[in-house]
Image (cartoon, rainbow, N blue to C red; front, side):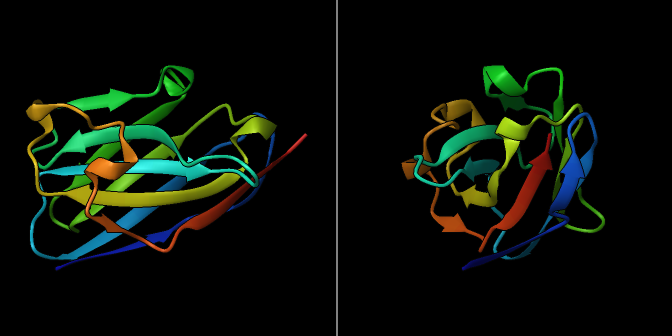
Length: 125
């Protein structure tokens, strides 16, 4: 089993920054991802990273603004979000899967076996 606990969400003004953290415990997973879900919308891919941290992928709309990283010593997966926009408002979820990053499909929600409870990010205009 894998346990994922997100933190770091909150209220921020447009143009501001937030750093989300996902504390990982239990079995080591091969791929970790961040997803988000706004009210009335489907859950969408934000970013993914391999267990080693060597491979990363981002949704097109997040490239250049968001950065995913792993901190092995703390066993966390972090998401640095800069230049935030009101449309970034959503609940952000951390996810993990056993399949290696190189096998693909890192942007698909159904690829992930484990999910955190989510953390709310609200960006005001």
